[in-house]
Image (cartoon, rainbow, N blue to C red):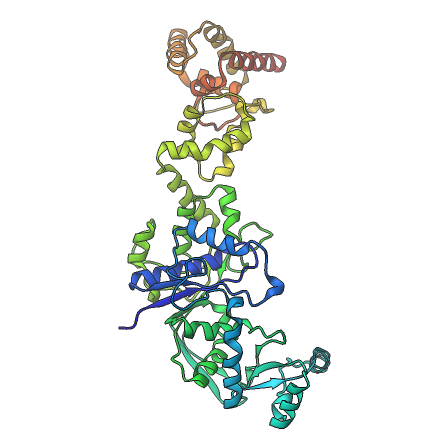
Amino acid sequence: MKEVRTRFAPSPTGFMHLGGLRTALYNYLYAKKNGGKFILRIEDTDQERFVEGATEVIYDTLRGCGIAWDEGPDIGGPVGPYIQSERKKIYLPYAQQLVEKGAAYYCFCTKEELDERRAACEAKGEVFKYDKHCLHLSREEVQAKLDAGVPYVIRLNAPTTGESTYDDVVFGHLTFPNDTLDDMVLIKQDGMPTYNFANVIDDHLMGITHVMRGMEYLSSTPKYNLLYNAFGWEIPQYVHLTTVMRDAQHKLSKRHGDAYYSDFIEKGYLKEALINYLALVGWNPGDEREFFTMDELIQAFDINRLNNAPGIFDMDKLTWFNGEYIRKLPFDEYLKMVTPWFDKALGGKHFDYKRLAELMQGRTEVFNRVPDMVRFLAEMPEYDLDLYNNKKMKTNPEVALEALEMVQPVLEGITDWQESTIHDTVMAAIAASGKKNGAVLWPLRIALSGLASTPGGAFEIAYLLGRDETLARVQKAIEKLRANA
């Protein structure tokens, strides 16, 4: 049986888009599931869009996500080089072969001529398609222009009648009328191949058996097949993937901060959670499982379970996934990861980060939300006295004032400021006073935090704040309540 060989062929134009990352993941999973090879190829033929450092971003992103390639630019392989610009000399001879066969031709039309014809076409309300003007040049005319150094491109000679068909794993049997195909450029004036031409040559030379890519290439594929057939090469199996969408109408976008892998890492999403969730956007395992390690994804992955409807990237679902992953982190790892986020909110003030992390791990869904959840420790927020109203605890500002005036001297009497000591001393005082626990602890928590929801309760907050800050906040709360009485 032929070895399965898949490839991920990104252009180094910036950050890694989530759609691209999912394409890489599916190619990797399929190759590994079938004992094959996953190839990384950098497609940099469009030098105008090249971004310095973008190739390293691709390497770092894939490696960070646990997607390891078997052959690629940095590790080599039997069919390199794996960067298209380094393969430049390969493509022109293949294009010239097609010219000899009549499957392609030299085109000497200038940009100005093409722009003029395009404008005339659009004026008639028609879609511009190259009119095969240079196809009709004689061999002698072509040679004369080449000898004279007239700039040229090489174009595909696409059929204008009949239909082209092919089979896709996701979309089934597809048919395209040939009069919609254009004579795409294969070799540009600078001698570089176009993306479309290099793609076909490289996929063949690299032995790619399965071409798994975005569905935007569905309509281009008949042109690729014309090239395969002209060369007499075997056509790979096509697997076109639906678009990753923010919702039913909108794609992921840079403006909304949800398009790039780096956006999510910067926000504090775990790469393991992101990869796990991304795998499920457009594919399902056929059972109720949702949580997968990379090895489990490899075992479960089946291209026949890819969806032909757009994959909706649900931010709420990703956030839930991430929270589940964070809760499962070893505590020491969580503490290491959360510490910079604590620093961001607490400004270097000394707090017991270990205890704070113990309180926060079960409440953390995304790390960038941590600063807002702990900022009250560094600086008491402004709050409304309505926070003291709590039907369940049977409290209001009057009850709160009485409770705080009762608990203030109790707190002042504690010298060993440990959480257990604070707890035992205050609980004993509440029992002696005959008050309900909630009627004292709710007002105390509001007085110390100014928030209805906090990591930990009154005792944990008091311990984290320290004795002096706790007493100062209780005093201010009493003064605020008295002023309102």
